[in-house]
Length: 259
Image (tube, rainbow, N blue to C red; front, side, top):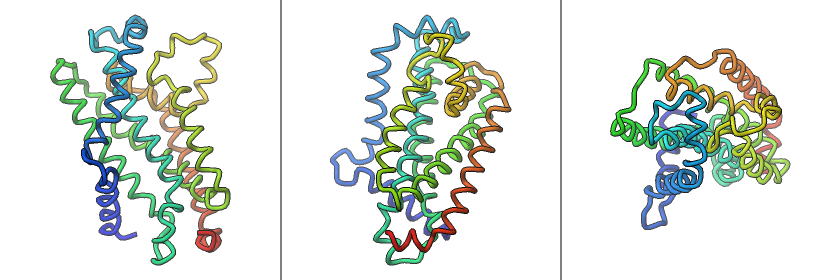
């Protein structure tokens, strides 16, 4: 896909998100903000002590808010990229039927659109950190690396599910349910130390647990995240992506016929 066309798709996607509503693009920020306020009100008192146990007492009275927002914004971007990429072929079926367009670069506009929303949201978060006199660290330079691995994983899984979803229409609903379960199986709104120790090995199998842990280690603790989990997730994501592209190209004619 040509860069100009990709940027046009991205721009149109950002415009179309809430085009028919009165508040328009503000809903993009109001909905996550509502979730943040709800989780903060419900969990802040419970989690504050646990953050101290994890060595995050330097975050002060805004500790849980910072802990929550840093992960929740990343998760929203990851989940949005994954679920929307899964649905892209069905949503763009009329366009695919009329224009000969690359099926496997088409979802890139979703990746770009979700990244733009994430960067805007993070800019507001950084302003908040400046206001509360948050201590910055050189390890923030890990942030784009962690984010790139996260989005690579979301895009790879989403593209694979999009290809399967052409032939198995229930894939979209399955992915929606899995993403909801995945959210609660990841310590985003809670601190992992509140769970029984016997459950910890199960979390080690969750790739997004390692991504969130790396993000918080770099941004909140001010230390370098563990390299090998990030590297392993990147390799797994690339393998999934290559497998999806291989299968997709072999089935491309069938995909276009089914759409």
